[in-house]
Length: 59
Picture (tube, rainbow, N blue to C red):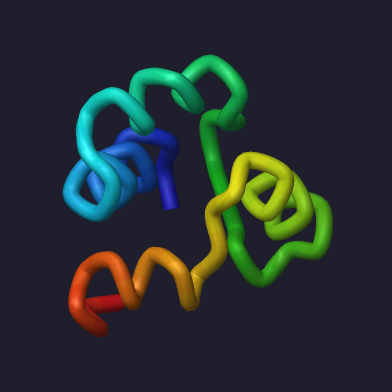
């Protein structure tokens, strides 16, 4: 997914403050199935399960 797509999901799940705080740390393209990208997201406190739960299971 693109950085913009990821930020839109984060914004919906956690709000604009969290999205703004992680925006500079995200690469232009993010693959949550890629170990390096998944580790980056985890380091930011973002997991696929956490996002899905925050969105009510929408992912």
